[in-house]
Length: 164
Image 1 (cartoon, rainbow, N blue to C red):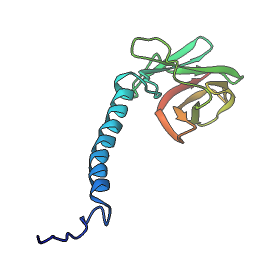
Image 2 (cartoon, rainbow, N blue to C red):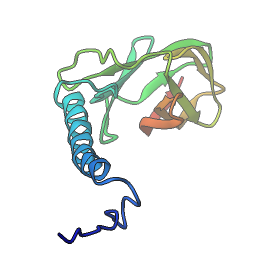
Image 3 (cartoon, rainbow, N blue to C red):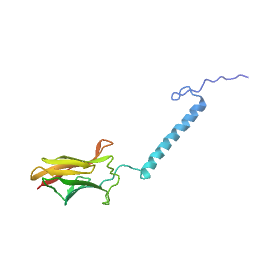
Image 4 (tube, rainbow, N blue to C red):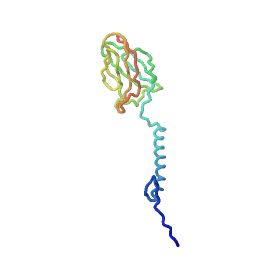
């Protein structure tokens, strides 16, 4: 009886692995891909999402308050300042007007910039002292900065300011 001699099974993708190893790899790779897809889908569908869902940024200085919608529309303005230090506080709201609790002061901060003659001195992540140098009108830009990822998550949006 003539015995046939076979060359080792070769694949241009898997090299000189044995046939058993190649079959095992061919079965394992798609299963790993499916498992990864399911894990990713589970995180999204189960509500595990650390990004805040902000619909409105509310800025309050004394009795003056403005709301800044996610499209940048400012209502309730202008924000009224004086030439003396006043506390500015930012609150971030969801679409149902509840406070967005995922805006964590350990990883986010309110950014304040611009405004001729306006000084802002940070006291905490979302508040600080603000004042104007002299009576007049200007525009100050406000945004929510994600310090861990080094980018602005909300805004920056220009807000009209009146200094009295």
